Length: 271
Ligand SMILES: [Zn+2]
Image 1 (tube, rainbow, N blue to C red):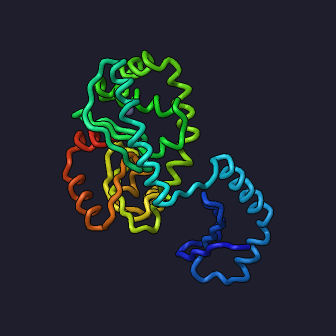
Image 2: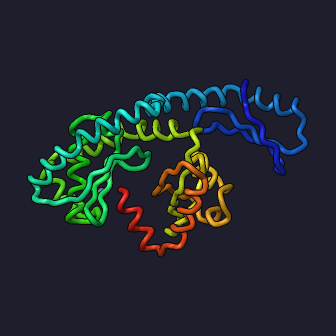
């Protein structure tokens, strides 16, 4: 059996099946290998059962999609051609004005609307159906009237798309594997993230990393930072991608200077 062994100042052995389906064994510093192997043998059927469960869950979550840089560029190009006309169609219908339209590849948001009315769309939307693209367009345009997700906001969405709830549910279901695909594409390509976590006491923590998923997990395991260790669980609520560590660090410093309200505005603008 393949497993990772972590020795520390603990008294007993523990086995953990990680989210990606590998076996993690935590052991006291000086326990002999035979004893560890014996314990694993004893727990073999339990481990097997949990590995199968993890495997089944991974299958349910959808395929592990990885997109190449070239594929992403093509998606961006297609999105730049698609969105202007479609946005204009809905904006005219709703009697709403807007500013510039930009297209990005992001792994946290599908679209956003700035205070000035500039709209941003995720190029991954080009891998989904019209019903989802239209929903995001109407969602962002509705933010021109309501910069929140209040009842009035959803009424505005509903007035154009009466079935928006089904569309939103479909986006949730199909969207997650696609957003994950971006994360795995960006891994190892020298990308750095500046991110914001919401802590359990409703405060925000800002940091930077080159592996977002791993870093958020570390925070949730109490190994991220002193600040987050006593404020678990934390949730990733915002992130930006940079090509150098320096840029990500500079952005981190800027966000750390923001007031709580300014941070919230930043987070809300990306939803
Ligand atoms: Zn929104």
